[in-house]
Image (cartoon, rainbow, N blue to C red; front, side, top):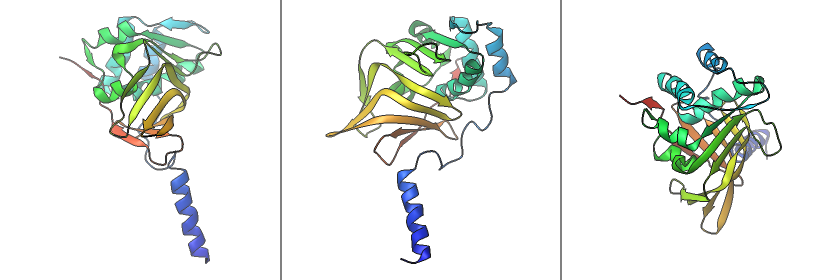
Length: 220
């Protein structure tokens, strides 16, 4: 094989094995702006402690997302580093999330596929203070399954989430897997793209599921 053939083969292998974190412009090109930082600072959460957000406090973040056309995963992706650097953690209860839907459209069936809002007991995000805590923890009432955009079935354990969050990524997923016929694929990570698009990557499957998740908006 000549030199050109070797280069082409190397590129092909790279694209097959790493559709991972290299292929597209990222949706959240800049860290959170001063407005979002001000919201976090206004809550006066204590360092080294978890804070349960009230309905009014969670609404501040949703209003920010509505004004900046962010979907829920984009919003949380920007909030996380502000909490981590302040050694803080938020707890958002299921009833609080559900109650805010009277004022905000949080997202349709696609958001609910990944985050089954009606079954959420609580959601935790921020700095981990113990071995059972991660960057994002979601607790739901029971094992959940739903059609995974025609791929097969997505399954989520009563405790699922992501061990790491960084700009545009939710990494090291746990408690989430997809079944297609006789095969099972663990969810690996989420990648956020332009236009509220989210790619859901699975281990040992070369092609992610890419879907547009609706932005949060305030109901009139």
